[in-house]
Length: 115
Length: 228
Image 1 (cartoon, rainbow over the protein chains, first blue to last red):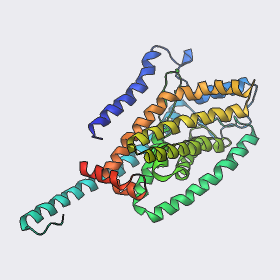
Image 2 (tube, rainbow over the protein chains, first blue to last red):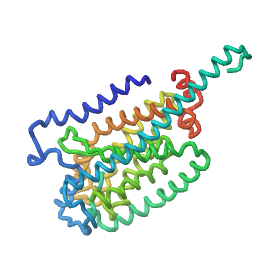
Image 3 (cartoon, rainbow over the protein chains, first blue to last red):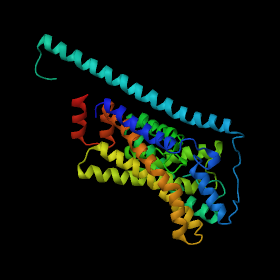
Image 4 (cartoon, each protein chain N blue to C red):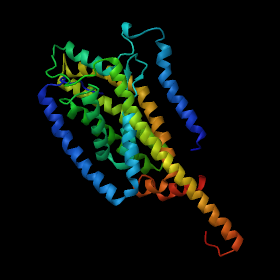
């Protein structure tokens, strides 16, 4: 797949993420929109009359702290992916450069058909 | 797909722990074996884990009007097999249970089962099937990642319906499927697309590692190398 198609695929992902925001434009958490599915399931379970028997040993004290930790989680992942794929990219470039050098050297000296 | 802390009766918590722990333990052994045999694959293992970190932190809005997140386990399962992906999933779930109050320690076994076991097993089987059929590995990765994502949520809905069959199992199942699985359909497609992009990029840069891990055959490797 040519790298230019990456943009197309990523744009599709963006459309999938943005579409609900347009569909339910103007609605918010107060109207019951854009809450988490995990929480919705929790509510459904509580409606059966069940009381949770254990609660989280530590909870982020506010939404701000929670978003801090989520951003941290994403950042840890992103930096690892970026570092390693960037390293691979550099390796691939260097490999190509050496191959080209070998080819031109071969061409100049006219040494045999290998390569 | 996180079942919240304390939201499963303890018998179910115990059952899912008993099912999940051996798989994670086997995954640890597999990681040791694979990285001993193919030390060059270590960076890809890190990328697979990091991919789970990123994707499971992205809570996206869906057409049902609620938000959910992809799982990211499909990539690791396709590259390293389902047991290794279980370990990666478990690491993220522990992080989220301890620091984010998402999921929980009591429900960890159940959450590892859905995100770390069922999802990766589905991804692995789908990818193997597509490979056998001789289709492009990119189609395989797309289907594997999307279906793994979706089946993770179907599993969560099933787990909750089993624990809370109120008024009946099927009524509860429809309810939880609506909450989890329907919300997840567009997000599963998004996860499939993202996984294709990263997989294709890896395949272009290091087809040799993918061949060593038997993810792609020598023919595809040559084809990719000819293009690059």
